Image (cartoon, rainbow, N blue to C red; front, side, top):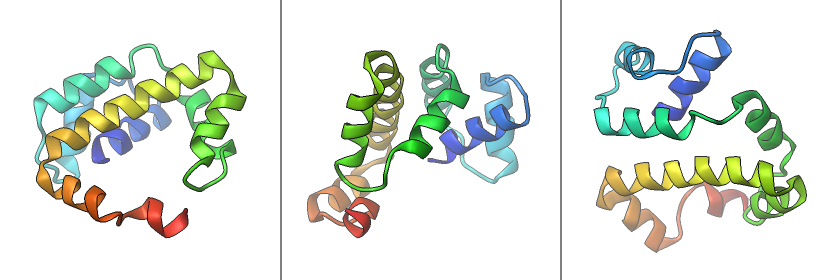
Length: 115
């Protein structure tokens, strides 16, 4: 999640989202940077309008099924951007290790708290 936050910080400050800038932000935050994750995120965000994606995310109600309903209401083009972000997050979670798998298997997590 730190990688996505770093990209949002760069976007908000008007800086280009590239591997060097993303790595610098993550280093400044004390994150142990994995180059493969940085490259994957930069590639995933290449054709994404972050401002539009943030507005869409703010419009979607919190909850388990809210994201799917919001993507369906938003149209195919908007849903594609969200899917790209979700696929990137899924790839990052797979790289994170077995701890995430254990959390998913037990049903615990933020989704369970609010959904």
